[in-house]
Image (cartoon, rainbow, N blue to C red; front, side):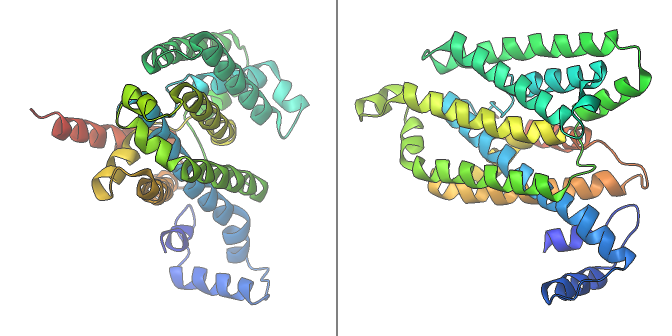
Length: 317
């Protein structure tokens, strides 16, 4: 229902009744060539579907990071994946490589940067403690962010700088159906991974020593979670840029609404994350229409007060 209603909002508003009618006509095989149909099926529907899936993916990876680190302040970007992706994408933009490999230059650069950050963090951290993993991830993130700013500062092309900065703040502009299929594949694989290892993830909540006494190889599971989460985040960041606070806040809300067992938490986290991202995207493209707010700025503005309230309530004593 949210996605159908959200299709009607944007620089040109379309009544929900007309949106539902166009979708019904499409399902019946009656393809329309009206301007409304073009806006709905070519521009807004792939964007909204991708927003919902990216919200679910960011939330689920945040849940995994908080579980494996046993720290509810962890988020999907804690391993430096987003900073690596940002550095790779900005490098492609400011050097002109993105135009050479158009239209996928930025995506390839972001994915390679994210992969590089993941490899470095996993290689240095090894099978050590989660605290070591988190701290090294923070260090790599700061280093790659510095490289990104250095790349932007060194660029002499104003248009490239604006493009790089807008990308770093996150955007769903220009999402195509091919990107939706990629996000769907990532979401299915991520949810399947969590479902298959739901019992092991529950054991980690008891503590690393207790889980090891029960026969769980915590180091092996930690490496698997880091690799799966990094791959998922790399795909989202390479397409939509950096979108913060979703993976940090949504798992908290899901635990409050549902429960801590991962078999249940999986579904609450994915659905709430999708809902929040869909409506955040509606606000981003409707508040100052026809101009659009970068989605990363909006999620930070909405997520930060909620996060402060959650922490204030959780640690009030």
